[in-house]
Length: 136
Length: 319
Image 1 (cartoon, rainbow over the protein chains, first blue to last red):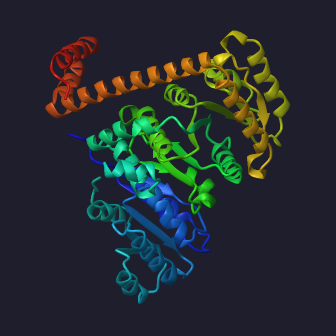
Image 2: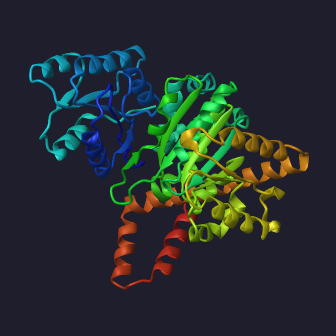
Image 3: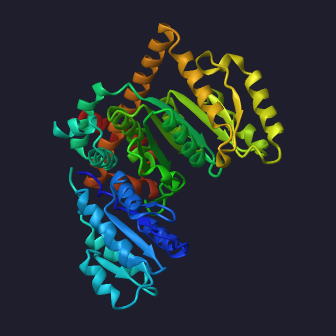
């Protein structure tokens, strides 16, 4: 009876990395795909990211990092989500990562990692396929 | 209901989920709202409206800081437009307020307008009730523009701020329609910019010329601020407090306001519910598409099509 729920995504830039062009481009692609995108802005701590994700009741957090701090920041977000009983929120990452870090990130709970050159449509489709609508 | 208890005790997850469910028209959410209603009516609601780029989010951010210093708790609803093409939205107001995200006394929620039926009006009204029931002392609702929907939102605020920037010139004239009926306080932000005196003058003229239309008999003050530099915020909150006192100054005023709010709430809800029910019905049955095609093929005019649909639906039971 009801129209489909809209997918809500938090696009966040944790850490000191100030390059947000990629994050903005993804945010626009998500909007064009019909998602509601909350953009957190720069220099977020993992705590701030998780708090925003919970208040905004998002389905997924997209973390953007190009400055190399991903091995601390990304797993920390996953950890905090667990602590707050919010680990049904998916976490994925985008940016520049050394090849060998990608499996480690996935082991730490990052569902998928997107590197430069990944077509936007691929990312959007992945989100549509992997985000499950939630109940009360 | 367990969720009702959770919300009354300020459980962030429960509140966030409920607002989402309200937005997505989940029937169970409506039941929760029914139970929560008796816990509403305590929060003071401030509406902040104005064109994009005038600094509303920055202003709200500073207001939150000051309110928190006075020990008050705040809920913020930041509303941004849904793209009419994709149905998606970028909700970027939070960026300006993120420094409050770790403060347990502040709850910030971004909402998209979702167009006519998701409704800036209905979902946001309900979200205000939820933040109210959650126990927040203040609820600040930030919306864009002064179109009809925003005027409705403003009707559910206790104090409405109209935010402008200097140099709007002819735009002030364009804003005229309905603005006096909507604005309780005029705020000229970015007052370090050129043209501030003229803008103040233009608004003052507009206010002086139209005494009879003062909303609730309150003459709107004009304030200048520089939100980015934390200037004028204390004075703004003082004016809001003055307005609050004015509104609660006598029983006649209070009962008039309660009447108006209940009337406005109920009217909007009825309109919203009827429209939703009819649309869900005619889109799923294909009737809507058929009617559109008939209009395009000039077999029928839209007025007749509309009347046919509506009288048929109103006769049958609405779920």
